[in-house]
Each structure stands twice: as C-alpha cells, then as structure tokens.
Image (cartoon, rainbow, N blue to C red; front, top):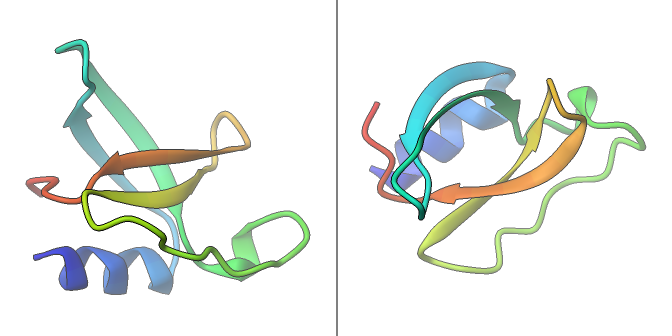
Length: 70
C-alpha cells in the first residue's frame, strides 16, 4: 500500500485525510513531485513508518503515516 501512495504522490498533488499522533484528523494537500516543491529537490524517504511529503498549503515538509488509508 505504501508503494501505491508513493506513486500517487510522485505524480503530483493529492488531498487526503489522516489521523495525527494526538488523535486529531488532518486534511492535507501534498506531493513528493519535485516540480511542485520550491527548489525542486527530490524528497528522500528515510523511514518505513512515515512518508515525507511537501504540504502545499503550509509550504513545509511533513511526515504522514505510511499506513495511510485512502
């Protein structure tokens, strides 16, 4: 499932909802596509439990759960 999510995020922006560590629901529009990231640098995925994305609303990098249910 993580590979499918990574593939979709690499194609461009997508909007999804996930549960934060504190239990709060969060809606985010994000991508891993360098064309949408200031500076155009690719994101290196360093951890298995999370996916690093660029939040297009907050203009910051964020980590979301890798088991995100879409």
